[in-house]
Length: 219
Image (cartoon, rainbow, N blue to C red):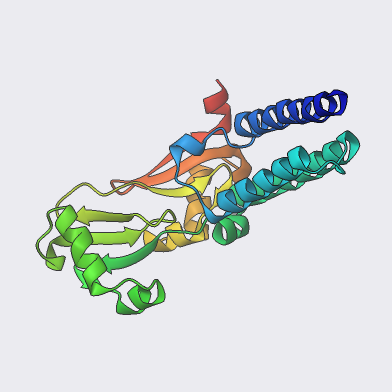
């Protein structure tokens, strides 16, 4: 009876610690998850966290010190990956991905559809869901990193295109609007902005570049 209480008492303590770690993770590392669908990086991170916590709870040989060291290493790696993902164009391409245009001005990019393994049946189904009868009625259609299909009808207002996200330039977005980095730098200079890091958000909407500086957001 004494050993029984000790064993399950230890498991209870481990459960409480595991819940605390999970809450800290959700609170500080995954706070914006409700704003987006899960990316491949999110799936990997959550899988690893589940494995770490389950092993800690069920394996008697994993002590408190081992668990703390593993969690610290995991947290440090997670911090680096998040910084890489959301502050560099390279990281975003690798771990999140960029939208891929499959229809532009009523013309299908067959090579892109084949690359993304999208069949004509899949496209027709998505069009029917949005009550679009003909491809010629489509101004632009793209596959989002989440896998969703975004369609803009001809004559409809286009979505804004994010050019700079927290100081990081999206070169694919620049190409989408037919501009280059030299043009972007000229536009920033007009706003007396010297460095990309000063920009929280820059988006192209209705043929205009809209810029929000980090200082403006803080104020």
